[in-house]
Length: 114
Image (cartoon, rainbow, N blue to C red; front, side, top):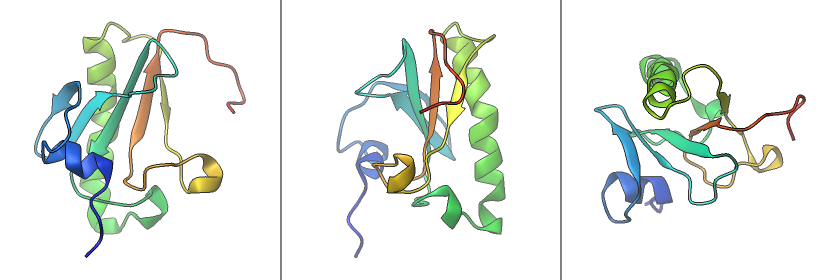
């Protein structure tokens, strides 16, 4: 059996988190190591290790994550400017292998990132 990711443990309430949104498809909570004044992680409840492993059957949940992001940004006071980031694989900076979107706002972001 595959060990639960830290995000699955948050979903199952085995680990506490500062949850800002939850519905039947996803959960969103404040990052413990924020890189901006607002830094929320939006995770599907279904474990998908990384975006390159998402399947056609995951289309609804993937779209849902993107639609939830601006709702959270607006609720947190950042409707006009925010950044969404998805890292795919350790070479891209992914450290938790449970797909998640970083929602960040509240500071200027440079381009290109990283």
